[in-house]
Image (cartoon, rainbow, N blue to C red; front, side, top):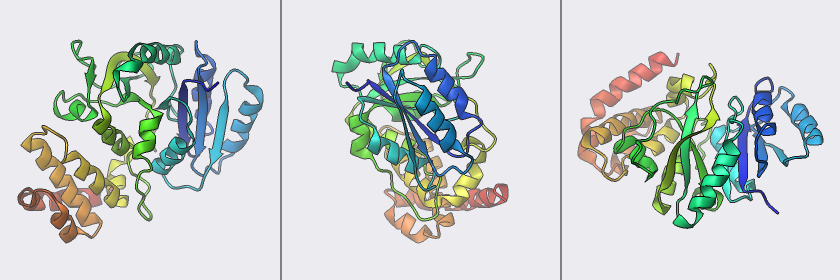
Length: 296
């Protein structure tokens, strides 16, 4: 019988960090999950340490798959392809789960399974227990993911647990030659077309941001993956109910990404609001200059 949850961990040369993630899974109060590790071409011996854990662990299945290096989004593509369980959650190789996280997810899902939610959105926390960013309002029990940005304006990363069957509907993410920084949230926003997420202030993940992680290298990402960021901004521009100010900010980023991708004319031609795109030209050029300077 399949477990309920796939705990998906993408990793790349994190042999010294991933042990804490594994230990947190060993300490779970429920083992109704499998651990799917997608290795994005590590060269540090990650395969050997995972192989040893596979031989030792009998309480839950560990599935290890090593692929050619292509970036986080390609690891997501592979993980979603391989996942067979009802639910899918990503726990990064430098993060870990509270001991009761699987049990809490399991309990919540059994209570809401018949209500057509696309998944659950809970909290990321720091090791001391404080939330990453804003908590959900007490009177809000569900929301579309886009509402987190445009309606409630909640800051900080959140932990999302999605229905695997729906992820398979929107995967795989597009890939662009030589671009490795396409944020997987692109797929998660696409899931809004299927329904809302149940929200809770329960903590499902303890995060530890690394100096070489995605969050700390944003300007290099803008420079090195402009097509990916342009596609993400186009998705943001279609959020229902987004304010003019929100859309204008997205157009500035969109114009900048198009400049960096050497497709400014095409980008403006493809934009849904060409007037706003033209108004974003000057600040978009300025943002491009900042990106090039900051990413040196």
